[in-house]
Length: 351
Image (cartoon, rainbow, N blue to C red):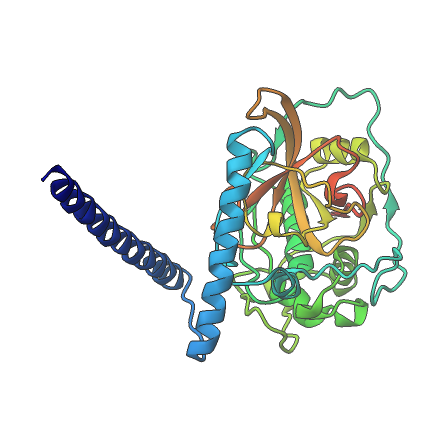
């Protein structure tokens, strides 16, 4: 009798376990589909076919897995920054790089399309004690974060950001300047619109042209178009530019502290940068010479790591919207052998 009762109980326990496992499988599938649907809705994603959508969903799930693994390492103090799924979540790494990175520097150190421009030499200030923390946003010299969208025009956003900062310091007025003006009109100076360019060449165009239109008068289109510059709509100009000594983090720090926001180029080619969310970014594979993305250094400082150690950082304004990183910004490790090349190709316009 006991054996019959025992067999009856074990049989129903096994049946209950199978039902529970089936419910869990259904629940997990539903969870995945809900997350995928929410991602598409949030970022306005549409695909041409069911095959492409399934392919993108697979990439999305794989990126979620990588991010979860990385963030587990962050919680355990192994890495100094977190990741978060964002609008690039359905892209492979090489797709992401070709889509948004447009700083045209080759591995040899020569610049694609460059017109052999040479800026003034930066001389760091003497007898000046630099502050430990600088944030030009708090001083009114930085416009809100912009979005270059599906156009390799990062160089133009970096250039306008530096010129906006210098114009503010000169006039006390913060004017948002036109990236589209640079995209459409600076090609003969070596820039290639949505296919990339260089900040120094943008500064040279503004100097020779006698000005750069405002964002309001010449709005961004995220594509190459005809030049439509109007002198009466000019918001700022420059008389040249200054190149900071290649690789010198000390000179870059001094320039940011005493001059204002500085155009810089970085290596932004890694998945870890694609999904950066918060913390001080440091990736050992990030190159200090193979640069592909123009951004704007607006400050620097030091903060505690999850393990309590001091971490020096550069405060960098990106052009991938406020939904990326820390409201559109990234903190890149400072005083760590020129991480990601922040100090390799730094410059600012003279006004």
